[in-house]
Image (cartoon, rainbow, N blue to C red; front, side, top):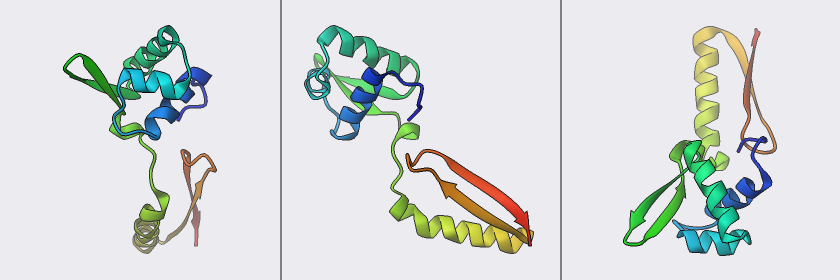
Length: 113
């Protein structure tokens, strides 16, 4: 996620990543935050579009917004390398990709052959 997130936001995101659609109460327990603090940061994350919820009866069930979910790079590797190879063949340029250790930054550098 974003390095600018508050530590409490990171705790809640981590709890979300390790759960399947937890309720507000479950997230509060997993994050070890007080109810007031957890609710404050859940709503900040929701307002920024990082997380979302749906209401089931009296409960809110939370999840990461699809565009903010972690990518499984092992599954993507063959596809990424295939796309790089295709790009190199089409453009005649050499491409390289650097994936940062946090798995969030993808950098492409093109060099002439």
